Image (cartoon, rainbow, N blue to C red; front, side):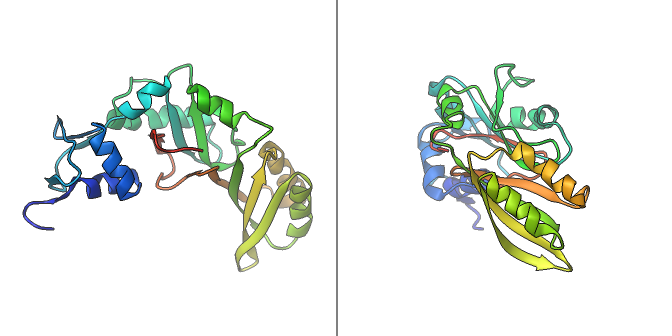
Length: 228
Protein backbone atom coordinates (compact mmCIF):
# COMPACT_ATOMS: atom_id res chain seq x y z
CA UNK A 1 0.00 0.00 0.00
CA UNK A 2 1.28 3.51 -0.78
CA UNK A 3 1.70 6.22 1.85
CA UNK A 4 -1.50 7.79 0.54
CA UNK A 5 -3.57 4.73 1.39
CA UNK A 6 -6.00 2.78 -0.80
CA UNK A 7 -9.04 3.79 -2.84
CA UNK A 8 -12.14 4.07 -0.68
CA UNK A 9 -14.10 1.88 -3.13
CA UNK A 10 -11.62 -0.94 -2.56
CA UNK A 11 -12.01 -0.73 1.23
CA UNK A 12 -15.80 -0.62 1.03
CA UNK A 13 -15.92 -3.59 -1.36
CA UNK A 14 -13.75 -5.62 1.03
CA UNK A 15 -15.79 -4.60 4.07
CA UNK A 16 -19.14 -5.40 2.45
CA UNK A 17 -18.11 -8.40 0.40
CA UNK A 18 -19.58 -6.70 -2.67
CA UNK A 19 -18.32 -5.75 -6.13
CA UNK A 20 -16.32 -2.58 -6.74
CA UNK A 21 -19.22 -1.15 -8.75
CA UNK A 22 -21.62 -1.72 -5.85
CA UNK A 23 -19.12 -0.14 -3.48
CA UNK A 24 -18.92 2.93 -5.69
CA UNK A 25 -22.72 3.18 -5.65
CA UNK A 26 -22.71 3.12 -1.84
CA UNK A 27 -20.09 5.86 -1.70
CA UNK A 28 -21.72 8.20 -4.23
CA UNK A 29 -25.11 7.75 -2.53
CA UNK A 30 -23.63 9.20 0.66
CA UNK A 31 -23.80 5.98 2.68
CA UNK A 32 -20.10 5.85 3.63
CA UNK A 33 -18.34 7.72 6.43
CA UNK A 34 -14.59 7.79 7.04
CA UNK A 35 -13.55 8.85 10.53
CA UNK A 36 -17.02 10.36 11.03
CA UNK A 37 -17.07 12.32 7.77
CA UNK A 38 -19.24 11.45 4.75
CA UNK A 39 -17.12 10.84 1.64
CA UNK A 40 -18.80 10.63 -1.78
CA UNK A 41 -15.74 10.20 -4.02
CA UNK A 42 -14.93 6.50 -4.73
CA UNK A 43 -11.34 7.36 -5.68
CA UNK A 44 -10.69 9.12 -2.37
CA UNK A 45 -7.69 7.47 -0.72
CA UNK A 46 -7.86 6.35 2.90
CA UNK A 47 -5.60 4.42 5.23
CA UNK A 48 -6.52 0.86 6.09
CA UNK A 49 -6.75 1.87 9.75
CA UNK A 50 -9.20 4.78 9.26
CA UNK A 51 -12.60 4.08 10.93
CA UNK A 52 -15.13 3.15 8.26
CA UNK A 53 -18.91 3.27 8.73
CA UNK A 54 -21.36 2.16 6.03
CA UNK A 55 -24.81 3.54 6.70
CA UNK A 56 -27.99 1.79 5.51
CA UNK A 57 -29.53 5.05 4.30
CA UNK A 58 -30.15 3.66 0.81
CA UNK A 59 -32.67 1.27 2.31
CA UNK A 60 -34.67 3.88 4.18
CA UNK A 61 -36.97 4.49 1.23
CA UNK A 62 -38.27 0.90 1.44
CA UNK A 63 -39.75 1.57 4.88
CA UNK A 64 -37.92 -1.14 6.76
CA UNK A 65 -34.93 -3.42 7.06
CA UNK A 66 -33.87 -6.88 5.99
CA UNK A 67 -31.28 -8.68 8.09
CA UNK A 68 -29.19 -11.56 6.74
CA UNK A 69 -28.00 -13.76 9.60
CA UNK A 70 -25.68 -16.77 9.78
CA UNK A 71 -27.42 -19.01 12.31
CA UNK A 72 -25.56 -21.85 13.99
CA UNK A 73 -27.07 -25.33 14.19
CA UNK A 74 -29.00 -25.91 17.39
CA UNK A 75 -29.45 -22.20 18.14
CA UNK A 76 -32.99 -20.76 17.85
CA UNK A 77 -33.02 -18.13 15.12
CA UNK A 78 -34.50 -15.44 17.41
CA UNK A 79 -31.71 -16.03 19.93
CA UNK A 80 -29.08 -15.89 17.18
CA UNK A 81 -30.50 -12.56 16.00
CA UNK A 82 -30.38 -11.08 19.51
CA UNK A 83 -26.80 -12.24 19.98
CA UNK A 84 -25.69 -10.81 16.63
CA UNK A 85 -27.52 -7.51 17.08
CA UNK A 86 -24.99 -5.48 19.14
CA UNK A 87 -22.27 -5.82 16.49
CA UNK A 88 -24.78 -5.16 13.69
CA UNK A 89 -26.15 -2.08 15.47
CA UNK A 90 -22.66 -0.69 16.01
CA UNK A 91 -21.73 -1.17 12.36
CA UNK A 92 -25.01 0.10 10.89
CA UNK A 93 -26.30 2.72 13.29
CA UNK A 94 -29.38 0.75 14.35
CA UNK A 95 -31.14 0.75 17.70
CA UNK A 96 -30.00 -1.29 20.70
CA UNK A 97 -32.40 -4.19 20.09
CA UNK A 98 -34.12 -5.86 17.11
CA UNK A 99 -37.43 -4.29 16.13
CA UNK A 100 -40.42 -6.47 17.10
CA UNK A 101 -41.67 -5.92 13.54
CA UNK A 102 -38.89 -8.09 12.11
CA UNK A 103 -40.18 -11.47 10.93
CA UNK A 104 -38.18 -14.58 10.16
CA UNK A 105 -38.90 -15.56 6.55
CA UNK A 106 -38.51 -19.13 5.23
CA UNK A 107 -37.50 -20.25 8.75
CA UNK A 108 -34.55 -22.54 9.27
CA UNK A 109 -35.06 -25.79 11.20
CA UNK A 110 -33.52 -25.60 14.67
CA UNK A 111 -30.97 -28.30 13.82
CA UNK A 112 -29.89 -26.53 10.62
CA UNK A 113 -27.34 -23.77 10.18
CA UNK A 114 -26.90 -21.09 7.56
CA UNK A 115 -28.80 -18.18 6.07
CA UNK A 116 -31.66 -16.86 8.20
CA UNK A 117 -33.60 -13.87 6.85
CA UNK A 118 -35.47 -11.35 9.01
CA UNK A 119 -37.39 -8.44 7.53
CA UNK A 120 -40.11 -5.85 7.93
CA UNK A 121 -39.76 -4.55 4.35
CA UNK A 122 -43.09 -5.09 2.62
CA UNK A 123 -41.62 -5.99 -0.82
CA UNK A 124 -39.31 -8.56 0.78
CA UNK A 125 -42.11 -10.01 2.90
CA UNK A 126 -44.27 -10.42 -0.19
CA UNK A 127 -41.50 -11.90 -2.34
CA UNK A 128 -40.35 -14.52 0.11
CA UNK A 129 -43.92 -15.49 0.96
CA UNK A 130 -44.92 -15.92 -2.70
CA UNK A 131 -45.64 -19.63 -3.08
CA UNK A 132 -46.64 -19.20 -6.73
CA UNK A 133 -43.10 -18.07 -7.61
CA UNK A 134 -40.91 -19.63 -4.92
CA UNK A 135 -37.29 -18.63 -4.70
CA UNK A 136 -34.61 -21.25 -5.16
CA UNK A 137 -32.86 -22.36 -1.99
CA UNK A 138 -29.41 -23.96 -1.97
CA UNK A 139 -28.20 -26.14 0.89
CA UNK A 140 -25.19 -28.23 1.90
CA UNK A 141 -26.05 -31.62 3.39
CA UNK A 142 -23.43 -33.78 5.03
CA UNK A 143 -24.16 -37.38 6.03
CA UNK A 144 -22.74 -40.90 5.86
CA UNK A 145 -22.79 -42.36 2.37
CA UNK A 146 -24.01 -45.68 3.73
CA UNK A 147 -27.80 -45.37 3.72
CA UNK A 148 -27.89 -42.04 1.94
CA UNK A 149 -29.87 -43.21 -1.09
CA UNK A 150 -33.24 -43.59 0.71
CA UNK A 151 -32.80 -40.13 2.23
CA UNK A 152 -32.03 -38.57 -1.14
CA UNK A 153 -35.06 -40.32 -2.65
CA UNK A 154 -37.30 -38.84 0.03
CA UNK A 155 -35.87 -35.37 -0.47
CA UNK A 156 -36.47 -35.68 -4.20
CA UNK A 157 -40.07 -36.72 -3.54
CA UNK A 158 -40.46 -33.50 -1.52
CA UNK A 159 -39.21 -31.35 -4.39
CA UNK A 160 -35.46 -31.15 -3.77
CA UNK A 161 -32.58 -32.14 -6.06
CA UNK A 162 -29.28 -33.38 -4.66
CA UNK A 163 -25.88 -33.84 -6.27
CA UNK A 164 -22.78 -35.23 -4.56
CA UNK A 165 -20.05 -32.64 -4.21
CA UNK A 166 -17.37 -34.74 -2.56
CA UNK A 167 -16.92 -37.79 -0.36
CA UNK A 168 -14.23 -38.75 2.14
CA UNK A 169 -13.89 -41.62 4.57
CA UNK A 170 -17.44 -42.79 4.07
CA UNK A 171 -19.01 -39.37 4.48
CA UNK A 172 -20.51 -37.33 1.65
CA UNK A 173 -21.30 -33.66 1.10
CA UNK A 174 -24.31 -33.03 -1.14
CA UNK A 175 -25.54 -29.83 -2.78
CA UNK A 176 -29.31 -29.72 -2.38
CA UNK A 177 -31.44 -27.31 -4.39
CA UNK A 178 -35.15 -26.73 -3.78
CA UNK A 179 -37.90 -24.36 -4.90
CA UNK A 180 -40.81 -24.27 -2.50
CA UNK A 181 -39.92 -27.45 -0.61
CA UNK A 182 -40.36 -27.55 3.18
CA UNK A 183 -36.95 -28.07 4.82
CA UNK A 184 -38.67 -28.34 8.21
CA UNK A 185 -39.36 -31.98 7.28
CA UNK A 186 -35.76 -32.85 6.47
CA UNK A 187 -34.34 -33.30 10.01
CA UNK A 188 -37.03 -35.89 10.76
CA UNK A 189 -36.12 -37.82 7.62
CA UNK A 190 -32.43 -37.76 8.50
CA UNK A 191 -33.01 -38.80 12.10
CA UNK A 192 -35.37 -41.60 11.04
CA UNK A 193 -32.52 -43.08 8.99
CA UNK A 194 -30.41 -43.35 12.15
CA UNK A 195 -28.28 -40.39 11.19
CA UNK A 196 -29.16 -38.61 14.46
CA UNK A 197 -26.18 -36.47 15.39
CA UNK A 198 -24.33 -37.65 12.29
CA UNK A 199 -25.62 -35.20 9.71
CA UNK A 200 -25.27 -31.49 9.03
CA UNK A 201 -27.48 -29.13 7.07
CA UNK A 202 -26.65 -25.56 6.10
CA UNK A 203 -28.56 -23.14 3.88
CA UNK A 204 -26.15 -21.37 1.56
CA UNK A 205 -28.46 -19.19 -0.51
CA UNK A 206 -31.99 -17.89 -1.03
CA UNK A 207 -32.56 -16.66 -4.56
CA UNK A 208 -29.59 -14.47 -5.45
CA UNK A 209 -28.49 -13.68 -1.89
CA UNK A 210 -25.98 -16.00 -0.27
CA UNK A 211 -24.43 -16.65 3.10
CA UNK A 212 -20.98 -15.26 2.26
CA UNK A 213 -19.18 -13.35 3.75
CA UNK A 214 -20.95 -13.94 7.08
CA UNK A 215 -19.24 -16.11 9.69
CA UNK A 216 -21.39 -18.10 12.15
CA UNK A 217 -23.13 -15.70 14.50
CA UNK A 218 -22.71 -12.65 12.26
CA UNK A 219 -25.44 -10.56 10.64
CA UNK A 220 -25.61 -7.76 8.10
CA UNK A 221 -28.24 -5.57 6.46
CA UNK A 222 -29.46 -6.14 2.93
CA UNK A 223 -28.30 -3.29 0.75
CA UNK A 224 -30.66 -1.42 -1.54
CA UNK A 225 -29.18 -2.88 -4.74
CA UNK A 226 -29.35 -6.49 -3.46
CA UNK A 227 -32.37 -8.40 -4.71
CA UNK A 228 -33.56 -11.88 -3.86
